[in-house]
Image 1 (tube, rainbow, N blue to C red):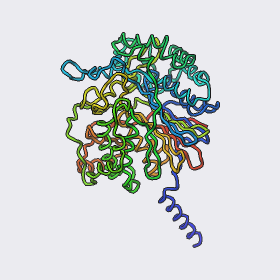
Image 2: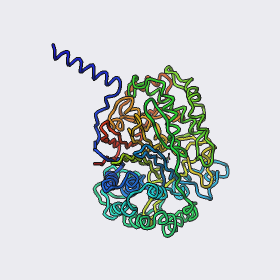
Image 3: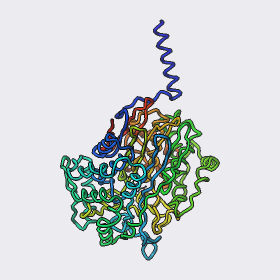
Image 4: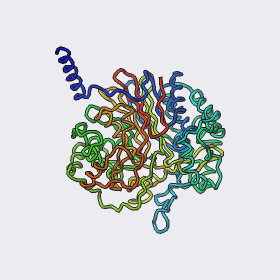
Length: 564
Ligand code: DON
């Protein structure tokens, strides 16, 4: 009898704990004591982790990981693209870096329209005409100058060695080569030195890329934006009909920005500010959901999906209309994020039936299966954290590959709104705020994010996925916070997405029953019937109560957590 009472009291205590959500989920991902890097490839995570072991900090590891991804993950890892980083130092200070591409000096608002004012197919997505001025190298150098501990040479030497010694092709990588083979060949005049026919297990060496990296190691920023690389690069882009000049390269600057920070219940979420829409849209979604008892509804339950969808619908409508490069447009941020405004936005929400997105013509939108960007998360042994999302935009960007320099160029110009009301490759419908202008940065959805709980670092998170990035990041945070999942489970859990237009809730293949979908349909939700895409490829780190780290490396890719 005694032991029965004891058991009961243990049970009650446990229930109490679970009820108060003070009992954190048991980790199921890699757990390390001190430091961790989670990225799209094991080679890149290992190089980042080695830099941390050598005494480098999270910022040194960022530069190493980002550059290693150029070698190991050319699908999205890049010298010819751009990205965003949000950091939180061990002392709690936060900041953000914008190394997003820019429109070339010669760009004009109508540059992708024909004489009748129609968008010219493929011009902003394929080949040299799609290329924006790359920002990645400027970003890496800016981070290193401000926060680096090790020398650039020390950081880049393992990366250059990786390019010289080669990487082993994975099954998934070989599949991607095959999938994009014909497009890459077509853009590059029928021939390329990019090893497009490689099979799983092959070792790929990138000696030309190693030389390009060496010039960055020797000369820093000038090793890319001036001199040999700049000359070859600008000539190559222009010979292929593109707009980026030597002057564009020389003028490019990465910019330090103030991140968007907001409270959700007892969390503080810190995310990317414009020219990314990530932070503001995430802020709106969370604050619209905050008054509701989300954890009670259950993970991916009908009610949670409805609430999330309706918040996302409203937030994306604002995103598409109001957001753009803050250096060019005034964003009514205070209003968009105010309690009064967000409360009013949700007044029309009811669990009884779907709100309809406005009747703007949806057009023939192909929702790309988009995992082409890449995200990595790092925590170092001092407690500094960086959250970085970097991209060429599409898979292998514009598909234009410089044989002389050994890297792909972005097709980021497509993230502008080529014409108001016409959707881009992610089905996002833009407005004047995101129209093209010389030296303007195109609006992004990249959402590198950090989360604090009780004033301490709790999570580092981000993902690729084009327009689905914001919802995938939001759901990962909700999974861990509201539904008590381990980091790995929160990352792996099936996701859904809504972005206002097209007015469709997209579900990943597994984890959503027909009954659930039918119930949603009966309430007026449109569901993706024909294709079920993969939504995002999240790489995250959670700080456990004892200070150890749990990695969440997405099962959807080759993503790997490495640390010590
Ligand atoms: O900045 C953006 O929002 C896009 N260029 C991101 C592209 C992307 O995530 C592609 N695929 N996952």
